Structures are given as structure tokens and as C-alpha cells.
Length: 327
Image (cartoon, rainbow, N blue to C red; front, side):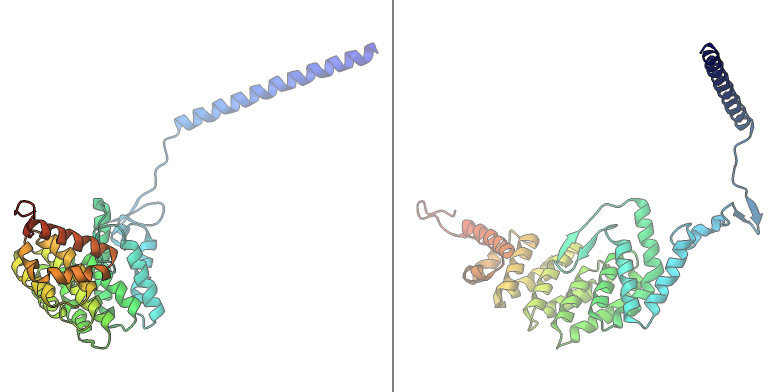
């Protein structure tokens, strides 16, 4: 037993000595590694010069920033691919490219939502605006060529892209005006006429204001109520862009109040009136009873606008039976 105890004690002592030696070796190795790292200069990417262009370790020079939308070569490849799709004869590829363009430029600057006739704006930094301009410079000529397409979704996406980038590329936008106007002559397709009126009134380029005015002046008498509504909404858009045309636009709005038989259009006319000339209540004299009769057939938002207008007109023109004065 004494021999066994002596052997176990010596074994434990040997294990402890081995553990101490292992810890000491690990400390020495760690200290030597840190010293060598401190004495070694920091690694920097090697740079080579070739014909005035610098190249670093990844094999791409600083000139790559001028390709595509950034320094990533994948952007240049994406750009070439999308251009090929826009020039393709395949409707599927054209549609895919247009969807990609709308997604890339969505929410980066103010634009007009033509389907609901409302303005949707968002703030964007300088980098986002520069990228939008780059995309417009690159793709707008190819997009304009797609205006002749018969595919309704592609045409709608092209219109949205044009409205977004019209201010930054007015010359290219002017090239597209004639093609947009062709939709106004399609007597069998009211939706095409509606889209043409919405797009022309949404493009904020000063050179096409006279064209837009003539289009709206004619469209308020279109046989289709949806086209007339788009034209009435276009009055407000044109007024917000060019206040100098207020009197001319007001005359068109008066004709709408006098002759319009549709509650759908009259509701929009009330909204435009409250926006463009809310104090000129004398224009409602001959249309007051007609508005009262149409009120029940208007949609909810138009009813609010019409009630606002009728309420202000009544307070300004009706006499209080108690004291003989206006309300």
C-alpha cells in the first residue's frame, strides 16, 4: 500500500510539472507572436501603374468608377444587360427591364402617382439624386423608344419613368410628347386617352405647358367621363406648376361647372375649385342647385369637397332670416 501511495503521489507531481511547463510554453509563444506582429509594417494593397491608370490587389483600377453606376464591375454588367433587354423584341424582357428601372428609382425623388392623381414626395440625399440622374442619362433614350409599344403595362411603366425624370432630362422628354399625344387620338380606347392626359399634365417641363393647356381644354369635353375627370385634375396640376395661367384655367373650370352632367367629374371639379380659386364663390351661382342634386351620387372624398364649397357659398350668399344679414 505504501508503494502504491508513493507511486500515485509521484504521478500527480509529474502531471502538475507537465501542466506548468505547457502553460509556460504557451505564454512564450503568444509573446513572441505579438512582438513579431508589432515589428512588421502594416500590409497595404499593392498598386501598379499602367498607362496612367492605377490598379490595386483586386485587379480593378480607379477608372472602374466611371463604369455603370459605381465602382462595382457588376453594375456595368447589369447596365449592359438591361439595355439589351430594353432593345429586345421580346415583350417579357422589355417588361422585366422596365420593372427593374422603376424599382431602382422608386422613392428617391418626388414624383406623381398618376393612377390616383396625388403627389407622393420623399426626401433624398445628394448621392441618391446623383444616382437617379445617372440612371436617367443612361436609360431614358432607350425607354423613349418603347413608347410605341402596344403592351399596356410596359406603356404605363414608361410613362411613370418619364414623369419621374422629365425635369432632369427635358430635351429627351420633349421627344416623347408627340408619341404621348397619339394616345389622345385613339377614339376606341378611353384608357389610353386618360393615360395621355395624366402624363402630359404630370410632366413638369415649361416648354410643353402650352401643349398641355390645349390638350386639357379639349379633353374636358371628351365623351368619356374618366377622360374629363383626368382633364379637370390636370387643371390643378397645371396651376401648381404655372400660376400665371390662373385666369385661363379658371375659364375652363367655369365651363365644367356649367355644362358637366357627371357627378364623377363634378366632384373632382369641386376639389380643384377649392385648391385653385376658393374665394371666387360667385362662380357657383348657376351651379349651386346642380351640385346639391349631384351630391348624393359623388364618392366620399368628392362629397367632402362639395360640402365644403356649398357651405362656404351658403354662408357668403344666403340671408339669415332672423336679422336679414348674410350668414
